[in-house]
Image (cartoon, rainbow, N blue to C red; front, top):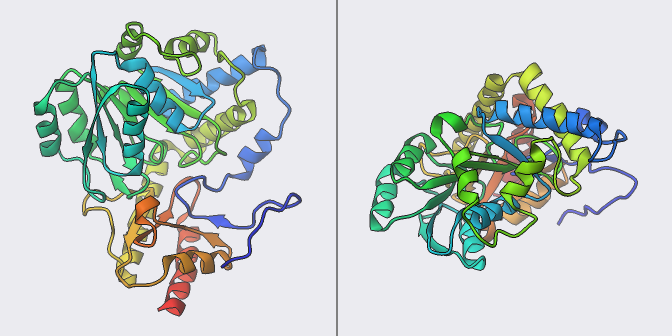
Length: 370
């Protein structure tokens, strides 16, 4: 096992190729180290405004973009608490661990929650979706764009129009795809699109974001017992003056503004999407050359995180541990997939050259373990 411990005097020396959190660029770390005014000041409001406007561009939306001091799971719970009335039913389309989590959030909040459990590694198909929607009437449908545990990307372009035809609200968890894979919120008419920032946006964890449609905000007014901290309406009210109801993680928001400026005005959104596409393709080519099968069904592979099966019979735990001694971290399979799969994250600021360098070293580690 690798001997890696917390060092209070030094930062981590590992290069992360994980599904999140990911490496944070120096420009963001330097911005976060700057002194800030209070969250009720004019400078803060100006900064908050830049964050909201930048997120609207990344999400291709004119909808309100709200900031949450939570992980993405907090906004998943916000969808449940804000959008499901006592006499309504919610459908959770689960293709992995985080789809299961969203369903569990619904159940533990006492909502009438139904889970459509799709075999892990597969995506929701239009045929399956139509079958589920034909069984009963749903008022809200929740699904992942990119399932981090399985490396599967759902065909949202085909699925969301079907959901909207049923007149249900649609909520999308885009945590491991936002700013890595193009998702046009307004064109698809997504009611809530949510994410946390520690993946493709390449920020430290502690901040989550979402876009909320006018229909979703109107629906929220009809829902009782929404709670306080996650309430769409109270957060929207403060968002009008570019503030938050409670103290937000101001350094993360400063880092978000710096990163959005880089993405939009330096790298460029389309080039960023293309880079992630190239990284996904390169990783899948490497996996095939090494004898690994993709866990994700063909045609539905993610461009931000790749999940591979243990088709060559090696110890994945030891593989991950040995790679750490070389200065790189990838991760074992998630939950029940541990040692059955492993995952490589290729998102955020990772370049093709950096990925190639890591894959060469990982190939050597694998050869030693065979």
